Length: 74
Image (cartoon, rainbow, N blue to C red):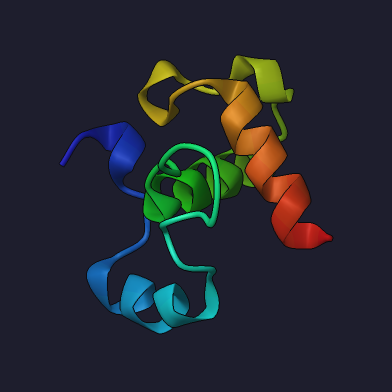
């Protein structure tokens, strides 16, 4: 496990959280990015306090993470 992945969700934690999230197949439009990756990205941002635009590339486009976080918070 890489040093930057040590804070990612463990399988047991993900098993508790996954049922609380929306289905991964949206009703319209394209396929959503992996929810687990998005949750890890949001947790990384909260832990580090970085701006959205400074998310590491391994999380994908920052706009995707930002918009999903906003949608889930609403």
